[in-house]
Length: 329
Ligand code: ADP
Ligand code: F6P
Image (cartoon, rainbow, N blue to C red; front, side):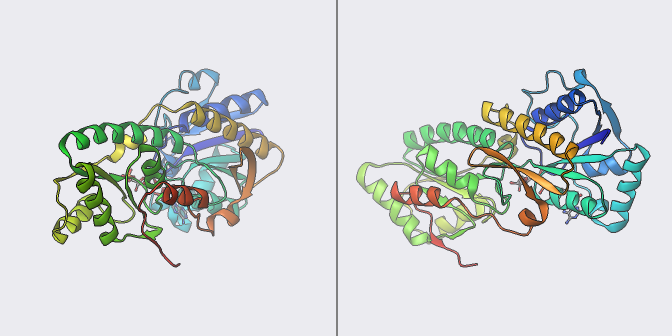
């Protein structure tokens, strides 16, 4: 193992920069040459490959996003694209690749691994939907960003006795919505893992409004439906006695300055990815399980669906959050 390359792919997540920094510096410290591939798999096909030295990653630890940039690349999902990618890596005599991204990006990493390229993945997604790791890089920062925004919404909601519907990210997972509901003191989480019960939601709103003219906040995961669609359904029921407003948080959720947790997680995962490649590990993702770093087989993690943490579901129910009924899969 003499030359390692790193790329970021799919949706950016805060902490990707600290991960690239750690990979670069650990690799250099181990006597390797490090290359950055710009713009994800698309950049690999377009030969956007640049050497990274110690200074190239200076000052990056506090920036959200990814300075290598990222993309979604249809060509790479096809066999021809993957073979072209391998030829490009061969041209630069790259011996090992580290891919930072979500499940799509790690599927791409596994495809290259199956052609024999030594590959290690890092979980870089705010959705926290990758099986096998307790946390992904960027999840903590995204949650901190979201809760500070929802706290602001709660202030105006209370002042106007309103019901707010807040749409948060989470393509196929209710993790962000559930955790946000718990830590902002919101009343309802509408998440893809549970079937919403509109009648129960109305009961919650009604009880709060009757008791003290209290406002309510409903957190909707985008994986269920758009916040606007959910609000329309509520309005059509004709039973909500207060004004309803909608806030779609959107991409600000990905833009927060990486928290201490994410900087440390990304740095530790980046270091482990390099050490793993050097010691001959291949086709794995670096995971954190009960606070310990582990390597998990890509085959294992990509074939399984991550469930929401049972203790978080229990906690939500115990503190009176309405989350609906479990969806049988
Ligand atoms: P994320 O990694 O955040 O889940 P995407 O699902 O958009 O983001 O995937 C990012 C990129 O990874 C895609 O644009 C594509 O280039 C690559 N990719 C996704 N799925 C696969 C797959 N099954 N095989 C090969 N490459 C894939
Ligand atoms: O994968 C992370 C994520 O933030 C999802 O929650 C969301 O659906 C998606 O990315 C949106 O990304 P973009 O708008 O950049 O395609």
